Image 1: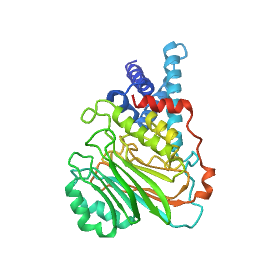
Image 2 (image 1 turned 45 degrees about the vertical axis):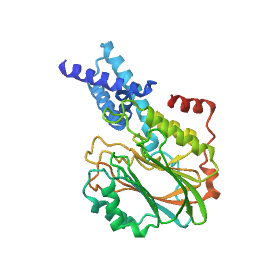
Image 3 (image 1 turned 90 degrees about the vertical axis):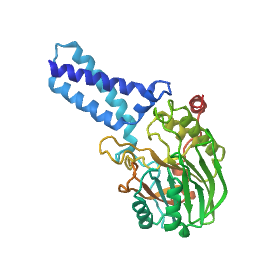
Image 4 (image 1 turned 45 degrees about the horizontal axis):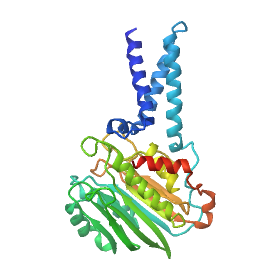
Length: 347
């Protein structure tokens, strides 16, 4: 009986955590439960299996708890299914032997002193373009000494507040802007990349997470993401990349709306979770660092790299530019309802 009470208590927790993300609220203590969705799915499955073996046919409470858990498990599974290898690719695999664009994205952890580990990863992967977030002057000085001369085009925004950004490119960058969309201490980068005679639009962002020490609500993060989504939509005929530490998981309501409005594709879908944070935990880990692409791109390689001293794992992505096949993965324009949801995210 005591064991069943414990499992019923866990069931109530699982049910509440499943419901929380559906609340139209931006408080950190609600939005933070967007993150451990995979972990919640396994918890729910574990509790449901317990009820399967301990089910009492004459106990009406067991029927209620079992049915509620089954509904929760279904909701959770639907959310994470697109990020499993069983789902179809949202971005198709490269179909041609063309020049590829190699991308490296990493949140370095500002206080991380293992600079050489990250530099070694960059040297090994040889990206054409790499974005580093949480970079201060110390990180900039180190990168300049070790790598700078290999990348003639750069955007350097070192900051001591954990929101610094460094962008390095072997390809020419044009019309570069450093914007402070929401706060004067949180930068984002907008630039054009001249890749193999093609002009690509690039956005790099790192909004604040909804946590007590950063922001009490998700409003600023959500607003920044929606602003970028609308900018992408306004230039929907331009090949586009959006990357960075979004401080949001791939399956959240905000990121889902971001994709619907921007029409961008998630390279993860059909390939795996590629959980980047927390690198120091094997259990509590989820995808916070992202690369979203427009329909002109295809994936040649996608890797989650090893630990380098940061609390985030780096992502290495290799893309081919194949605009003649874009119709095979092109998304519909956002509906009036989807645009309305985006507007509500910005209130």
